[in-house]
Structure formats: C-alpha cells, structure tokens
Image (cartoon, rainbow over all chains, first blue to last red; front, side):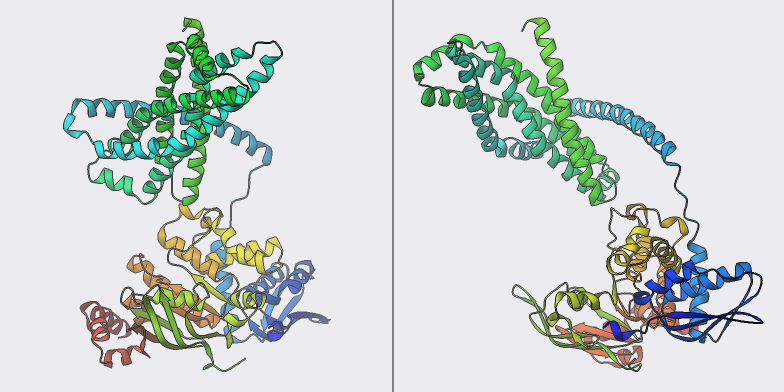
Length: 378
Length: 262
C-alpha cells in the first residue's frame, strides 16, 4: 500500500538567468512529510527570477497543491516567480487552495500568558459571584412559584411529586440503610476501643447516639442523596434543556419551574428527613450490633443506656437540618440542570458541578447549624 | 492508476439483520471511481445502515464488501486502518468532537495518521476551512457555538483532512436552507471535479440528486432495485420509484434544473 505513491522531491539548479526548482513525484499528503520540512528550511535567493517547474509532478491533492502554492508565494515575495509545466488540473487546484487559504487565514493570536492568567482569575471570581447571585435568585423564584402553587390548589401536580419521591426516597433506602449500619458499627468499634482505656466503655452508647442523631445520620444521607439524586436532577433537566424541551415548555405557556423544579424540590424535602430517620435507626442498630455481639454488652443494657442518654432534641436537630439540606441539594441540582448549554459535555460538567456544590453547601450549612445550636443551647 | 471505470466499492449479496428484522438481503451495488452516487429510499429502508456497513461500523450477516478491491473485513486491523484513512465520512450532524475546536477537529486525523509539523497542520486546517467555505473565525470555535449548517461544513472539512479518495455523506443537505444546500452541492461538485473524489451520498434532497449525482441507486424491498442516471429513474416502472421521481416535489426540482440549463 505504501508503494502506491512515489516520493515527492525537488531539485534546485542555477544558471545565468536564475534559479529553477524542479518538482517531481506525487505531492500527496501521505508522503509529504519529508519534502515539507525541506521546503520550510529552504532559503530561496532574492532578486532573481525563480522558475517553478512542475512538469514532473504526478498526482497532487489539496495539501500537495498548497505546499507548491506556498512555495510559489514565498518565492514571489522576494523575487519574480514563474510557474511552468503545471498540468491544467494542478494549476486549477493550486489556484483554488490559494484562494481557500486566503479566506481562512488570520486566526487571532493568543494573548500574553501572564495577563491572560490574571484576566482569567478576575473572570473566574466574577463568574463565581454571579453564580452565587443567580443561585439565590433562582431559590427566590422557586419559593415564589411554590407559594403560587399553594394558593391555586387546582394547579397541584401530585404525580410527578410522587414519582420523584420514589426515585429519591424509596429507591435510596437500601443503600442509605447499609452505609449507616456500617458507619454506626465503625463508630462503635472506635468508641469502645478508645473508651476502654478509661474504663468508660459504656459511654460508647452515648457517642454513637449523639454522633448519629445530630450529625452523621443526616450528613451521610445528604451526601449520598446529593451524589445519587442531585446529579440525576441535573442530568435529566440538562438533557431536556439540550433537546430544547425547556424552550418548548416556555413556548407552550408552561412554567418550567412549576413543572420540573418544584416537584423535585418538594419530593426531596419530603424524602430527605425520612431517609435521615432510616439512617439514624440503622446507625444505632449498627452500633448496637457491634456492642452486643462483639463487645459483650447485653441488649437490655444497650437499650437502657440508649434511653437514658438520648434526648429527643438530638433527633430533632438532625431532622431540622435535613429539611434545609434537602432544599439546597434539590435547588442546586435543578439550577445546574437549567444552566446546561449546547453539548453533552456540558451536561457532564454541570452534573459534576452540581454534586460538588451541593456537598459543599451541605457541609457549610452543617457548620453554621452546629454553631447556631450550640449558641442557643439546644 | 486504474482507469476511470475502475470499481472502487463493490457489494455482493449483502445481508443485514437486526433481531428478526431483515434490513438488506441479496443487496448488490457497484460504485465507480470518480462518480457521485446518490442513495435514495423510503424511511427505514436502511440507507444509513448501508453506509455504516460499508465503512465497517456495522457487521453484515452475510455478503461481501470490497473497497479499493480489498475485502476489508478479512484484513488485519493495522492494514484495515490504513485503508480507512483513504475515505472520509460526514455524519448527519457533523459528529464533531465537542471537546475540541473546529480547527483541532480537522487536525485529529492528521495527528493520528501522519507525522507533520504543527505549522503544516495549522495551515492544512485553515486551508480545509476555506475549502468548505467556512469563515476564518470558525477555526477556534467549539462545535456547540456553530449553526447546524456550519457544523456540517466543519464535518466535511474533517472528512477531507486526509485528502481521501472516497467521501461518504449521510444526508449532507438535510436541515440546510435552500441556498446553503445549493452551496453545499456546488462545493461537493467542485471538490469532485478538482480532486477526482468519489462520493457516496445518502440523501432525500431531489435538488441534490439532480444537481450533482452521476448515478442514483434506489433501495427498496431490502435491496438495490435500480441503479442509473436520472433519465433512467424517470423511465423505471416501480410504484415507489414512480411516486418518488414523478411527485410534485420531483417535478419542481426537475423544472428548476431545466430552467437552469436554458
């Protein structure tokens, strides 16, 4: 297959009248590599007549023709250049590619790298600020739509809410239950191992119940759901945006926030507290399993300790937080979905961003709540 | 090289089947070097499947496909890849890589198959952009920033990057405005004339068929029922072919062509 073409070459000869450049062989992209380098390094004399003799050229494609045309142009800049012996088709091709290249040239040059990176920093900062403002605005829009939804009862749409509750809530129960059980067990291991040194093993129960009810249950659930459902929201709405479905809704006089965003937000706000409850219970079960089966505590002792040390407010703290986490995960997921633009790649980017932003927001909110609850002594 | 009547694609007894649905059976088709062949057929007759089968994206159940005189299915991967660089494919929506700019898209096959300097590749990319009639500022843009018609042109530029012998076009003028479609037709015609390109084109566009196709192949009843020039199509007696080439739209296209020649 390689033997199909003969290697393109050129020879330079000088006589009294000027320089002649004789091209031979097939000027085809597949075999041009070597001759391209030679031509680039070639120093053509200036001020005399250069003859480009193309009578020896066999086949030529656009790239080969461009290379010959380029040589002609470079030679023409410094001296008089005449083309001889080109087949009519080659001449036409050279003319055509010359025109095509002129039309396409003038690609804008890159900016200086230091200035560009400073500019990039500024743009990034401004983009982050506008993003935050937009997200707040979007939250307001969702709340406003929700109120209108509550006032006009006939507009209530239960089917999508229930559908998303199944997706977000019911389908997530097994995985949430499993990871909570495991983390509860790990926590009990750690606690009993550390507290054993002080002979305070029995306080492991306090540790597990405090940690799970106040923090771990709701945090684990929120992070899991952000990865599982927040990303799904972004991908679903994002691909709808890509297929112009959102535009179609607007054109049909439908409110996309009411139809797409609100059911997801409501489903999330209903389900995350329920899932948190599942996580709390399974965490306590996991901790109990370790203490009872591996550390030799009796079931009665475990439940007695649990009852004695656990107050309902710990449980409430977890549940109160879960409502706010749910709202932020759902709103960020939907917001990022609506920000998708153009390509499938954009859906991927926005999905990643949605998960990162949701988990970040959840953890920041958690810290704020921790300070708040400590301050009010709850 | 072989003469102008050399057969560049030869299909014998092709059978394609998806599940229980037989798309092609006993399909024969020859394409000669340097001609423009238009493939027409109703929806679901497997025009795109035929194209995909020839370029090796779809494995046929039975039959033999020879491109450049080689049965590509029997060659080793390395050799087959060499032959694959000798054709270019324009998919329906351009199928540009969305994470690369248009210029980078054109350079993908150059980088992959050849060892050229970056300057040369930049020059080739600019050249191909000009050749398919894209404005100079299209090069650094991403595919999502282009209109559908521009994406098609950019897709063609990428298909032409390696100066192939054959280009496969999947509905090249679908979704283009009439002016854009006519310009695209002219572009293909001029490339065919200057480069000696062989064009295998799936199309529904009667104007394209009139304007640029040397021969037309009609897919129906799971095979190619007729291959021939426009005149032969007009004379052929088959219900679908009659309706297609004698319908009101066909007549309008024919009238336009006739007036153009006067």
